[in-house]
Length: 201
Image (cartoon, rainbow, N blue to C red; front, side, top):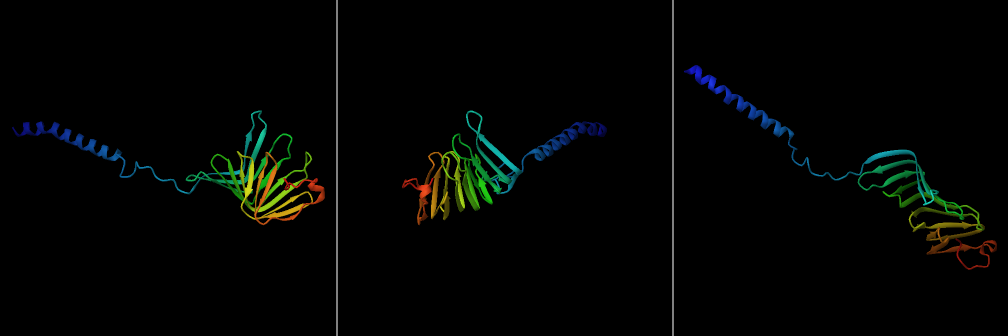
C-alpha cells in the first residue's frame, strides 16, 4: 500500500518541478523594473570622424557646397557635431568662390547651419569684376539653405583697398549685398567705390 502511494506521487512531483522551472524561466526573461522605459539620450559622443568632408550637389551634379574639418565629434542628444578647423566653401557658376573658416565650429543635424568660432574668417576670391573681400570676426554663422553668412560680433571687413569695421554683419552670397550694423567706421577707396554709395559687397 505504501509502495503504491509513493509511486502515485511521482507524477505530482514531476509536475510541481516543471511548474517551478517554468515560473523561474518566466521571471528570468521578464524585463526588470524600468528596463523597458525609454532612457533619455545623454550628451555623449556616439561617433567620430577624422579628415571629415561632405559635399552638397546641385541638380546638375556639380558641387554647390563643401564642408570639411580636421575632426568631427557627434553628440546623440542634440545631434550637433563639434568641428575642429572647419571650412565651408560655396561654389556658384559665374561667381567667385566664398570660403568661411574658423579654429572650431559646430554643425547641426542636417548641415544647414554651420557656426564658426575663434579667428573666424570669410574670404571671397577676386574675380568676375570684384576685388577680393575678407571679413574677420570671433563668430560667423553660415545659413547654408539661404546662402547667407552673418555675425552679431564685431567684424572687420576689407574689400580691395577699402577697410570697414562694424558691430555686426550680414552677407547674402546670392545678391552679393553686404550689410553692416552698429558702430560702422572705415573708408572706401575710390578704386572700390566705382562712384556707388552702396556698402562693399
